[in-house]
Image (cartoon, rainbow, N blue to C red):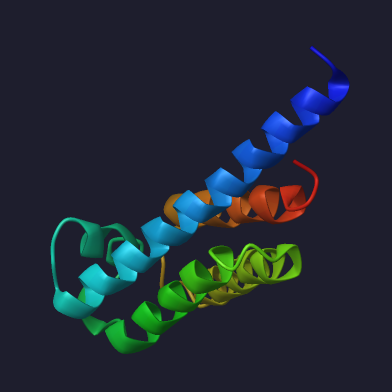
Length: 119
């Protein structure tokens, strides 16, 4: 197998990961809007007071991230991960979210954001 073959496989694999993550975000946003468990609990359980979370704002942000990730445009995908990091960093600084869950999202978003275009 040639190096070009492996680069093509990794390119397709990387684009697939971002597409799956986009679909997952859209499903989570829809479940928050429709109040369907268990997908709506995944993001809401990150918040210390899940009942006082502005669900409309959270759903809109998650939907935006999902749509940007499905755009298949590297800069928009990268931007969606930057927005996600900034969103959860803000709530982490205001002690509105649980530290461990939020740090997992922040670190994984940084890693995925940095890997856009490099996979």
